[in-house]
Length: 345
Image (cartoon, rainbow, N blue to C red; front, top):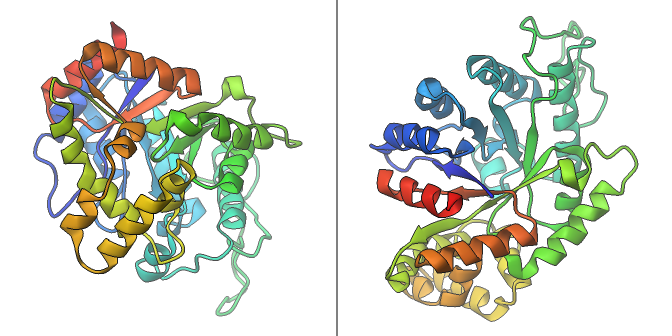
């Protein structure tokens, strides 16, 4: 099992100890460091800044929101980071949700699968640098010839030669069609709230994509990275309590009514009644009650918390279910070391 340090996105201010966490992760043998974005800090700058003193870890976005940048702009970010890191970049992409896409970026959310396919295709054209970039699809037309166009657009190749044409592209995906498409067109899958309980279901979705004509990878060549809080502790109850506010937020407050992909994941795990309660309480502004409604079992499904032997046993379960990389958020240097120790030994 490989481990990635998940820095996430910033709150009101940058985290104070991120640099030391990144350097310690690099020192103790973490496979990668990831940064995310929501509607505040971006995903690329922290990797370039805090990753500049690293030597081994891969540097990945988990995820960069596709509506935040045109495909060509995103490819520029990725090829730049790949050069600066000596070929260690992972481009993790995701569609986000309609509230962010339409409310923050001012872009349409409709047809996310088709938009993703076009987006990835253009990024790969840029990285291949074999010909001037063209795309005739309806979502990202290059050259642009729609309303307001002057008709002067010229197909271009990147001035900078990308370091790797096969820079890995991972996709954040949650529903069956999205996961299947990820297996078809990407190099890896970033799973949010993965649970071994439904690992066989995920493998079926992935298998559908690998079986499609022209699929980019086989299952053996493909990486599954799952967000998973790993904590070695003698007080698992206290650690669960720390995670419940985040779970309640994602189930009750992240997404529109009737379109919350995170909530649907937990429903598939068997928590339909609990999810409905959390959504109702969150919508009513009763957030403390929403947090209290998160079952202990739901936290244990998506996190690994307990003493050393318990954690080692659960990591083996996640690995057997198909996970290659655990994406772990660490509070301090000691947390980084404890995760590295339990995974290695």
